[in-house]
Image (cartoon, rainbow, N blue to C red; front, side, top):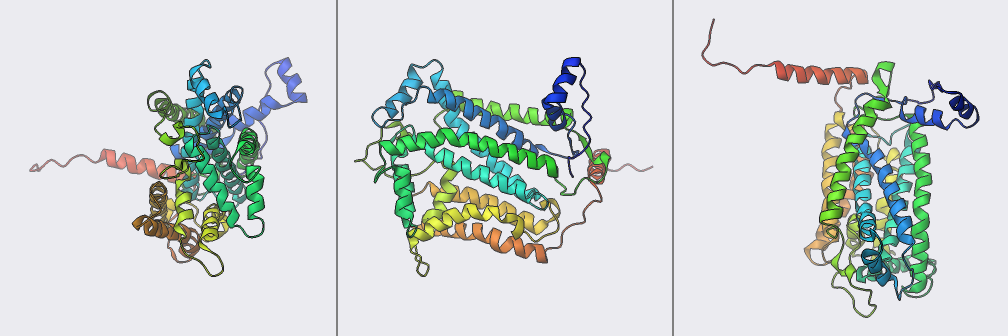
Length: 434
C-alpha cells in the first residue's frame, strides 16, 4: 500500500490558508496522523511504534535536564549523580525516569522487532524500512552502553573496561579503536568525557533516523497481521480515530507499568554494584552489562574455542556483532512468498522457539561463564544463527502455507463470522426430544 495520495486537508481560516500556502505543516500532520489510511485489522502489536516515539521523547527531555546537573569528571561524577538524587528539585524522579526509561525503551523495541519478524514486515517493498529500524536499534545499543558508564559506579567502570577490551581482538586496528574510545590506555577521565558527549549526541541522531523510518513507512504503507497488501479502499480506515485510539490506550497501559517501576521498584532493573563508586583496584565478582544486552553477552562468551586462524576472543566478538549484523540481511534470507507467520505453521513454531532462545540467552548472560552455562550458551547461540541462516531460507522452499484470504476485508469478515458462530452455538440440553 502506498500512502502517496491526494491530500484531503482543507484549511478552515484565512490564517490557515496563508500558512498552508507557505509552510504546509498542518497539512503534513493531518495527512500523516489523521487521514492517513491504515489496514483495518491492525492489532495491539502494532502500537509499539507510537510507544517508542513517546519513550524517545522521555529519554531526550529527561537526559537534557540531567545533563545540566551532571559532571563528567571521574572525581565527582558519582557524587554529582547522588546530588541530583538528593538536592535537585525532582532530581530523583528525573534520574529514575531516565534509567528505567532506557529499559522500557528496549522492552518496546524488542517487541517491535519480534512483531516485524512474525508478520514479515521486512519483506519487499519494505526492506529499507527494516534496515532503518536496525540502524536505530544499533544506535540505541551504543547510546545505552555509553550512558551506563556515566554514573561511574563499579559496574559502569568494569563494564566499560571489559567491553572496550574486546576491541583489541580485532586484527591490525583493534588496539587503535580501543584507545580512540578510551582516550588513553585505560578507562579514565577522557573516557568519561567521550562517553558523555556521545551519549548526549546519539539520541538526536536516533531521532533523525526515526524521521526517515516514519517517512519510509508512509511511502510503503503499514503491514498488517494477514501480510496481504491493501487492495481496495474498504481494506483501510483513517488513522484517527481508529488507530490513534488503539495507540493511545496501549500507551496509557505501557506508561502505567513504567510509572509503577519508577515509583515502587525504581532500582529493580539496575545492578546493586553500580551504587558503589568505581574502584579500579576492586573487581566485582561477576561483571555483567545491563539486562537488554545480556543475550549478546552470552553469545560473546559462548565462543570458547578457536576457529581455524580465528582465536576464541576474536570469534566471540565476531559472533556478538554478527548476531546484530544478521538482522540487516533478514529481508534477503527469508525466501517465502507468504509474509505473515499466521499462515506459516512451521515458521511460527521456529519463531516462538527463537523468542524462547533469546530469553534463555539473556538469562545465561547473567550467569557466570563456567560449566554447564557455557555449553547451554553455545546451544542457544547455535539456534540463534541457525534460525536466520538455515531455517529462514529453507522453510521458504519446503513449507506449505495455509490458504491466504483474498483481501484484508475478507479476513476481517471471516474472523467476525467465526466469533459469531461460536457465540450462537447453544449448550446442548440433555434428554430433550420433540
